[in-house]
Length: 46
Image 1 (cartoon, rainbow, N blue to C red):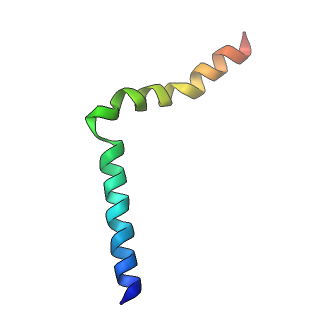
Image 2: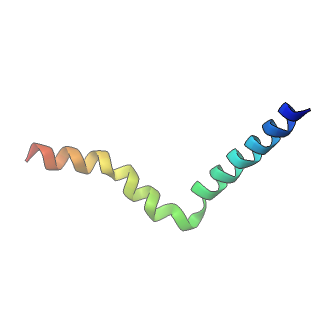
């Protein structure tokens, strides 16, 4: 019984995190984070 409750809480937390990350308000932050590895390569090679 307790493991089922913990599983449900974790599932709700996971779904909430996915919704929060993919919400439209965070799109600019996600774009900036996606460019970080590429920007790092350009600065280290110069």
